[in-house]
Length: 252
Image 1 (spheres, rainbow, N blue to C red):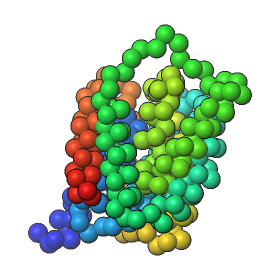
Image 2 (cartoon, rainbow, N blue to C red):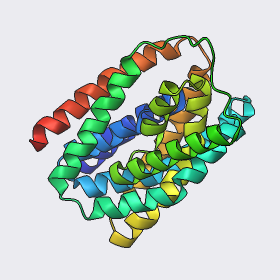
Image 3 (cartoon, one colour):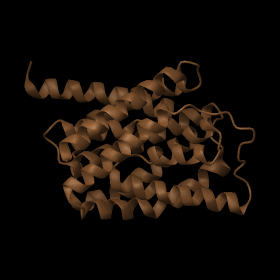
């Protein structure tokens, strides 16, 4: 088989798996960055920027599918997205100026941290936060700002920061994952504006990734509302820790 076709087939398979995890547990996009960076033909800046732009389309589809099921709580999702608006751009601008090795170490640690969070047992809360009131809205806006900044820096869609934060702050897990779908749209737009200026995005690869990523998201959303989502959480956590650890080892 032609080397280019083989590489495209591998990229398509990874994109499909990433879309599945994005739709199911929110956290999954970071695995795409790890795969691109570990393939050897991508710089960490190109990997992060190309992955991020695909999350715009994954976020659009995920938002529509979650909204159809009534899972998006808009008074929770809106302040998170508003907070992320400008900070994704700032993160991407900062990433463009960071040494490749340091950026790789940061992204690897983010990936490993995401895996640890996903593997941690979910505890039932006696009382979930409502997201109502100005203090709650300010808190959610802060989560969005931190997630947008982290997204722009790492190329992740924002979910890797927002989902763990919202669950630690005692927001309903399904609402946190649903919010992350909307956040992907905002974070991808905000961060990609900066990446466009620096020419980091590989548009051919982005188109291929997006097509298979969307197919995965469609299946993932179905699984997110089913009992089988637990097994995918464990798989996502293990993959994040393994790939993040490998990326970290290569950068040290």
